[in-house]
Length: 334
Ligand code: AMP
Ligand code: TRP
Image (tube, rainbow, N blue to C red; front, side, top):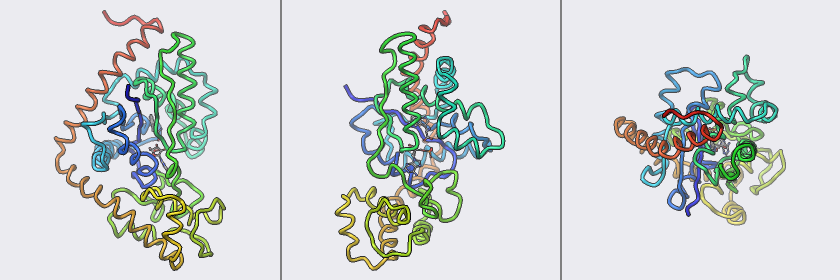
């Protein structure tokens, strides 16, 4: 039996190198070996106020980026979360087994809520919607970046609670799968904070997947480093900038720590490091942008692929949510 993999990505903000190396690249790499569901989680985006026209555009744009990055709809199920009604329904049902305290202690909720003038209920409930996403498909594995690990652990707790309240073994208990390299790409302008979609509009913060080669080179050239000249991996906070560039290089090339350090043994300072990191980044990302532009010229084809993905997802998610309702005591329509 093939393992089932579920992962999601929000359509808001600019998809960047951290998303690519921490998530998308790994999705693409394993799509043939496993049963994969990749979901554009538009309902999650609504937990922070959005401009409707923007959200609409970005959702289709992200679908095109993912296809351009190598997600193959013949090998996996790519769909938009709101196209499959079972996700919102499952979130409600799971809300009714999830203690409030579990949500209040989520780090991401605490971080995001201090940045909001008024905190929406949906923001607190975000991890329950995410639990529904994963549990509807009985996913074994959830490939995510480090920041999402706590949410996957909460999903396990919710699943276990549901199983013990209603039916042992009903939900598969999922595992978070965190990539060894690339799990946490840091901001180029500030290597002490994670590269983030919500900061990706700031010049020099991120390499965005749709940047042109010159923009990519410029952002990497401006990356914050330190006053030294030693090019090696390091956990020291002062050296986080150089370390981040090496992590990016390592994640893209797939080389070992020793091989990466050997590649830079003769480099002349950080300028050289930046030039070479920029070259590998441009080489891996430039083709994505080209394919993306092609796909945007064929909107009907994009819609067709997304409709097919949603149809496939529904065949799994709808019966599962109906079973949830049934064992919770709801009356299914005759
Ligand atoms: P998000 O940008 O929050 O929608 O995240 C989409 C996926 O990218 C999730 O699996 C995240 O864990 C991952 N991700 C986001 N930012 C980074 C980062 N800076 N480094 C590595 N992975 C990331
Ligand atoms: N919360 C995830 C993020 O911001 C996105 C997400 C929603 C997700 N549902 C998911 C990831 C289910 C994995 C599985 O990155």
